[in-house]
Image (cartoon, rainbow, N blue to C red):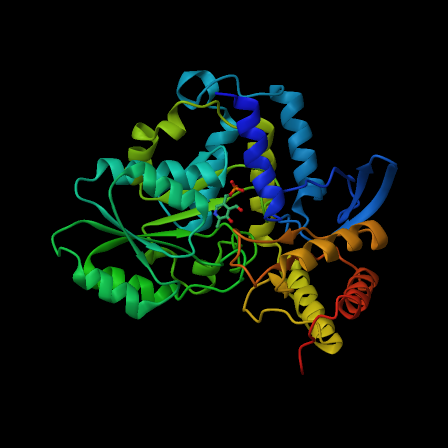
Length: 404
Ligand SMILES: Cc1ncc(COP(=O)(O)O)c(C=O)c1O
């Protein structure tokens, strides 16, 4: 086989379908979020980032940065091993205690990313619990889908956030089979929120465990940043809460929080936990500082919510269509792959505004969008600059405006 020719022809398929991903070459500026330096063939210049998942700017928080620097001074760079073989650092232990406390669970277990925590946990449960059926929301993240596939157990997909469909599918399954319902709180692309309470009610009725991915909610919702389940007083009803340290907490890593026995089970059987180098101690130290800060400070959460409301109001005033939802994610709808990419390119090249286009297969065709994520650190001037630029480009692209 001509391997090189194969790779190139697969890539040219992506180009033809307009799905080839181009990464912006950026350098985040310490202490100057949401500004970054963009590197191009012709030079460097400042851009304002509007699509970061560092939702609260905690990646630049002085307490977090200081904690990471101190940990490097104390421990050096890497963990030096897997968790089992010399890699468990005291910062990992503190982080797991902090996370268990955040979610009101007996234990927590950290992984190298949110992706791996979903993949390893769902995969291990699927493989190890005899006859397990996993009921998976149709819009679950790729990491959950891959984890369930790796688990090789029976999988039932229920219509997104549709309680009737979930109940019909639970009812149709073997009543003796062990069951697990896997879903997210805030869905990343549409920003809609699951009916967590009602899903837990169904889980109780049909004897199922619940697995909630709170990746887009931890740090941002609830009085201590425990996520939507904390805000709604539901954390104790979930068997497993999964989250990331890489979005609102501003660092990197993933975790689950659950009972002692469940965390110990995953710790003892999940290959994605066992056979990989532990997170660098500095990441764990930064995450501990970030979680502790957000457990007591409401400033970032309130400022974030205010910025989101303000952006939505300004978009409405300009007639720029955005998907209504109850979260912090503002999907500005373009509905055409080429125009979406073009708007994103012009925003970057002519306005120094960086917002990545979101096209198929991440979202369905004809729903292409700019997924805008305002943070507490975007100023009024930033908002005016963004909405002014979108206003101009909407006219140039002859895109429909929303009617107020
Ligand atoms: C819903 C959801 N779960 C899990 C992940 C993976 O988290 P991480 O980026 O920490 O790997 C993502 C990433 O965007 C996500 O959107």
